[in-house]
Amino acid sequence: MKTFKLHLIGADRLFYEGECFSIIAPAVDGQVGILADHSNLITGIVPGELTFTTPGEHPLTSTVAVAGGIMKVENNDVMILVDSVLSPEEIDADRAREEEAAAREALLQKRGIQEYRSAQAQLARAVTKLKVRRKGTGHGV
Image: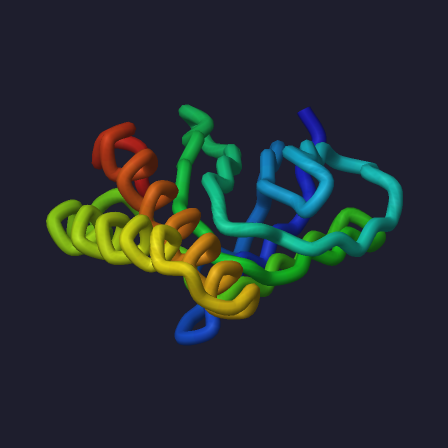
């Protein structure tokens, strides 16, 4: 199976850089899948689960929680720049539940559209963290 180069970068660190078989990313128009020789593409990334498979003697599939960002695919080189990227091991489930509750409360408040959208984004990030955390800590990078 052919590979491509992946650069997965959070605002505070380089999370992964190396060869990759496939990516499934949460994009603005829904899930987008990337394999080797994918056509050139630039798309927005939304908060959600990002899954990627790396080669080796036993290929490893990792699922991480990402916040908003951008993905560029060009000539078998994929760069994903996101506000944050967390492996299941890095997610504090109690804190994520608190963030989820606070975001749900903010959504119930009758405020302006900007506050509403901010609360929606916070809720999406918190729910994603909890989903990734529940999937377990056995498949992290």
